[in-house]
Length: 101
Ligand SMILES: [Zn+2]
Image (cartoon, rainbow, N blue to C red):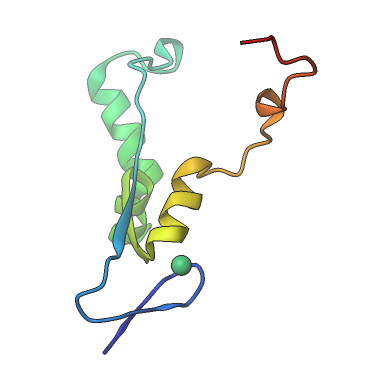
């Protein structure tokens, strides 16, 4: 099976350069638990248990940790890393006046 760039579909020839883009999403915990809703740790854990009851295990795990991998050719890797979330690049507009050297 030959490798292909996930973005442009170009075949990665055997021995050719390609890159693995690994994206990891880990649930962020800021340390804040709404204390008014939980009198103690035991009732807090019980509430979580109730919330998760009936949900498939892999779905619960996916909420906490998810990793994906993509193979990219060198060109697509550069393009991706330059702006991975395709944000507006307003601040990168060329300057109106270029100062003399
Ligand atoms: Zn590509």
